[in-house]
Length: 117
Image 1 (cartoon, one colour):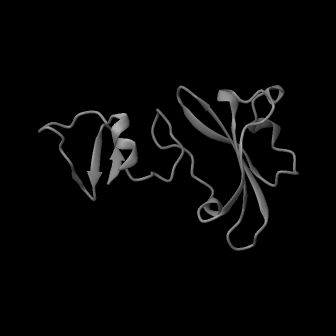
Image 2 (cartoon, helix red, strand yellow):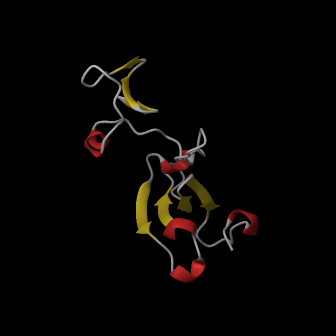
């Protein structure tokens, strides 16, 4: 089952709920398939880093308030599945979507243009 717009889908055929395509509810979050993209209100969101899928998560949380990340920020430190290198993904969010503020080593400085100041 995948989520597409306001309907749940299994393959290419929409699953109709109560004879209409009702909006998804919180009850649907356990059965809907994960879409491998970041959420965006304006179309397709950013891609999830390939090396995150199948990785070992070693830290999951946020950063100090002083880092001034939109939406509080979400940090995922992980070991790549093949190379076992430590990587960091920092996500920021607003009411319009979510984006990667940093992808790379947790020890390297992010591109200043991609991080909220």
